[in-house]
Every structure is written in structure tokens, then in C-alpha cells.
Length: 167
Image (cartoon, rainbow, N blue to C red; front, top):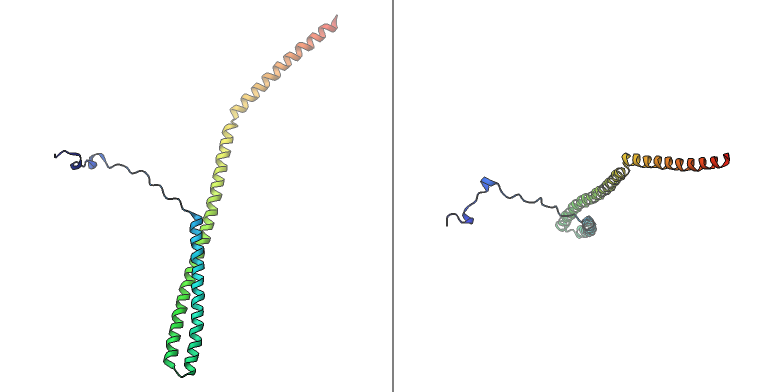
């Protein structure tokens, strides 16, 4: 009917259900670092490949000029420029990844120091609670009571000894 559950949306009156705070997924730092290392290595391999292709273009362009094939030499030099531009791009990428890796390691160090210091502060706080000044007062009072009792017992025996030697 009209009043069935699916037809009534009263969220405007009662408010919507609050979503639980979404937990952020834990970051696997070692996995990210491993991926960066692999990508940096792969980028370096590509740079090496393009450097070899540049050398190849240069030597082929020289050969083409010696054979008076100016058109082929120009095409090879354009190809060389294209590879040089790609190397510049890859160098920028590699540098950016290396900076990111360094920043990540630095942040990890910061986090580890923070966690360690935070843990140390909690430990100090807990130890301070356990070594409360009121508890020290209690211990001192008990100590003084025990000293008084010991003095009483010592006085008792001293007095007894004096009484025995008086006769």
C-alpha cells in the first residue's frame, strides 16, 4: 500500500543514518618502495636503450652523408632528437620518483620517531601515575610507624635490661 516501507522516506525528518567513519586502508610502505625501485630501474633501462638508439642514429646519419643521401641523414637526425626528448622526459620522471622515494623514507623516519616518542611519553605518564606522590606519603607514613614500633620494642628491652641491672 501507500504506507509500505519502501514508499516512505522520512530521512528529511529524522536525518540519514550516519555512516561509520571509513577506515583508511593501511599503506604498505615496503610495497610502494619496491614498486618505485622497480619503476626507477625500468626507466633507467629505457634511457640506456634510447642512448644506444641515438648512437645508432648518429652513425647511420654519418654513413648516409658519406653516401650523399642527405634526406636519410636528416630523417635520422630528427629521430635522434626525438629520442633525446624522450630521454629528457624519462630523466625528469626518474628524478621525481627518486625524490618521492626519499620523501617517503623521510616521512617514515618521522613517523617512527613520533611513534617511539609518543610511546615513551605514554610510558612516562603511566610510570608517573604509578609513582604518585600520595603513594610516597603512604610509604613514608608506614615507614615512620614501623620505626616508632621498633623504637618502642627497643625501649622495652632497654628498659628491661636497665631494670635488671639496677638490683
